[in-house]
Image (cartoon, rainbow, N blue to C red):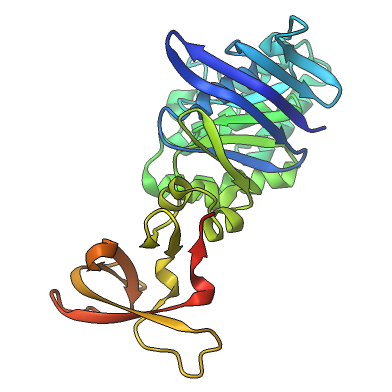
Length: 324
């Protein structure tokens, strides 16, 4: 069943954290709320979870209403049938792995075959043999797996992720990102994920919801969000953008050529800039160029170019994206 949000909004004193928002979280899909700090994504997540009360609007799962300001309905968090994975893991330090995972089942009264259910969840996150360990005896990645097992053991209709990888170091974060999305897809969960990290959003999501200042700017597949941004902020926030006309048309760095294309099917435009910096990225060099009135551009090259040198850049019209 889809989770349907209509007209949801929230203020804290004089600050409008979330303007009236409509959103559909589709069953079986991995949806990500993406935006900078203070954009309203965590507020929206917490209202869906039942941890924050909206000012207006409705939240429904299929035909079942979770919240309605007009009808005065508000299901408490523990009755919504959602799982949640927090940023700080929120594990009970005095409980073993087994007891932490079993906690949700006990709290919801689902204790039939408890041992079997817990063991299945522990095995799914590849922590078999660690059932009797305590959180302090686990690594950060293992603690994250326990938190995930606890969220899914109750077989929730929706799992909510509140920046669950931000507390991990960079290498472990990359590893856990791949592991997490694999687990979500293997189990067949519906997931709503909150992050400010565009790499996480682009690599994990079926659908991305880009937010800014309490409003949704664009919803779409990662490919559409990157390749066809509908708002200047979306273009700037996701990936690198080279502007040909301020807030109106852009080209991505990977589509810039250093030589004209022979027998090009589309007309190419030539631009001239001065190389200001060159950064080695391992598989390529990232080149920053001063393009005069067009500002700074980013392009990629296979060798290191000298600072201060002028360069001609070529852009095919088919790679120019216009924001309406």
